[in-house]
Length: 319
Image 1: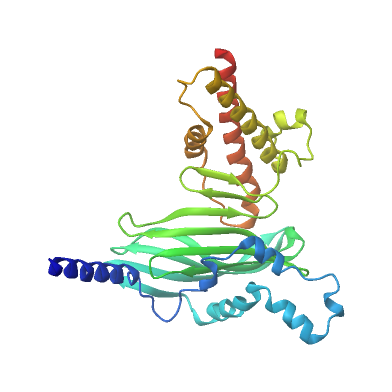
Image 2 (image 1 turned 180 degrees about the horizontal axis):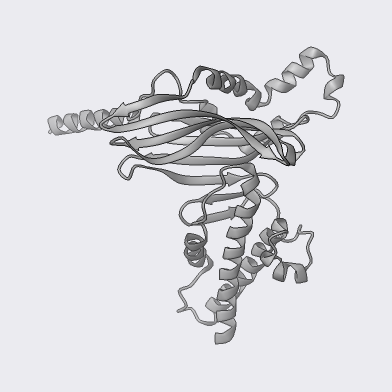
C-alpha cells in the first residue's frame, strides 16, 4: 500500500519541479523580482521626497533614496539597455522563442524630437511572431511637465510577466500602472491577467470580469448629483466619470436589494450583473503608454455606466 503513495509523491514532486522550471532564461535577462509582489501604493508613499529633502545631509538624503525601491532597480535597467545591442533570444525550445528587441527612436512633440529607449518582448512560434509586448522603456515627456517615464519588468520561471510604469519627477516617483501577464504557450500569446492603475484614478481590473475602485468614495466626490448623472458621457472629465460609475452602481445595488425583498424568487444580484457587464466592457485594449490611461479609463467607465443605467431603467419600467 505504501508503494503507490511513494510513486505518487515522486510524480508530484517531478511535475512541480518541471512546472517551476518551465522557462529558463539566458544571461539574467529576467528583470527585477521585486515587481512580482510590489505594493504600488506603498511605493508611491516611500518614493515621495520630503519637502525639506535638500536641507538633509548627504547621508540623510541617501537613506531617503534607499526607501524608494525604484532607486534600487533603476541602475540595473540602465545597464540592460547598454548590453543589448539589437535583440537577444532569452528562451528557445520546441520551436518556441522569446526574444527581447531594443529600439531607440525619437518621439516628436511640437516639432521637437526626444530620444526614447525601449525593450519589447516578442513571442515567436515556428519562426512566426505571434505576440509582442513592451517590456521596458525610458523617456522624457515634455507634455507631462518634463518628468521622466520609466517602465520596468520581471519574467518569472513560471512564465508570469510583471510590468511597472512609473513617472519620475523631481520630488517623487509615482506609479502609473502595474500589469501582470502570463505566457500562454498553448495559444502563443501574452495573456493579460491583471491591471492596477494609479495616476490619480486608482482601480484594479482582474481579467476577464472584475473591476474594482480602490480609492475614494461617492461621499467624498467633489461633483454634485446633477453632474454625476451625465458626466460619464464627457470624455474631458474622466475623474467625474469614475464617480458617475460609483453613483449608478450604488443606485442599482439598492434597487436590487429592494427588488429581492419584494420578490425573493428574483435571482439577479449585483455580483452577477457586475460580472456580466464587466466581461463586455473590459475588452478595450489596455494602455501601453502613460498618455493612454485617460482615454482607456474613460472608455471603460462610460461603457460600465451605460450598462448599469440600462439595468436601472429596465427595473424601473417593470415596477
